[in-house]
Image (cartoon, rainbow, N blue to C red; front, top):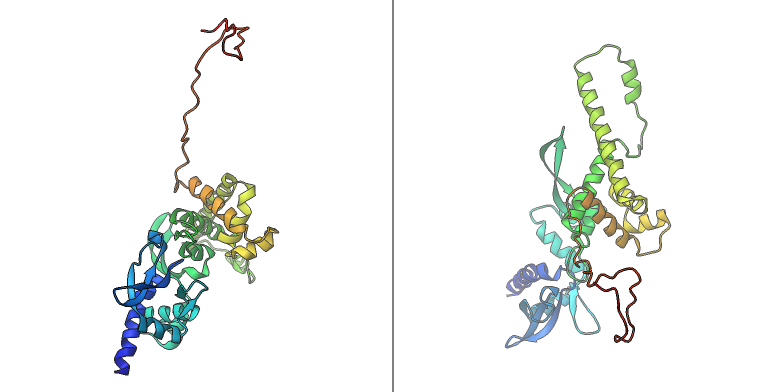
Length: 296
């Protein structure tokens, strides 16, 4: 009996925590017809519960510290509950691997080779500030940056890396090795291709920053290229707290337009139409009944 109850608690958690893991989602007591709890999400403005849970199951979650209750009686997924949910999603692994994966945001990234699409690799997007921002949702339930902004930042990062602009942490021995090589060989063409790719990437990189403008380019370099977080970028640039996120969103939008990922905004209001023409010396009457000579 105890094992069946434990299994029910876990099964219901896997079913419900998928919704509770979203931004601004919470549990609230409802009548089902029997008293229970409803899951409310911002998608429908929290007007109606999208699913319901029995009261004893919610009590079991609270006993495990998987829920946090606020002053209004709403229960949200706690850090412990979210950690458990991520471990369950990473099932079939050792405890160490599951703990590691629960702090990762696994995604795929397309690699390019000599201007052609090569393949896809698995990456941890949690290591990238842009990946974190794309997965993070605001109070309106939408990601902090959209797919076009994310792709624009990734393009800038790729050009930054291919151009060889990343700061070196170790000594560069390539120049010394190249200087010792006297004879030419088949590797010379490959070296020339690499240099051409680096030069083209450098040109694209600086052209993009020029189109964005000096006011917004610094935050792109800090976050997209150097992989610094928003707070670290604010400290490095001397900006006030909580200002970097807004500036970064504006910079990524302008960068996405430069790459053609977003369309330029169109004028929504038509220009005002000229109603009358008047000859030289025409003076309108303020009272409306005076002389208005010279009007066409």
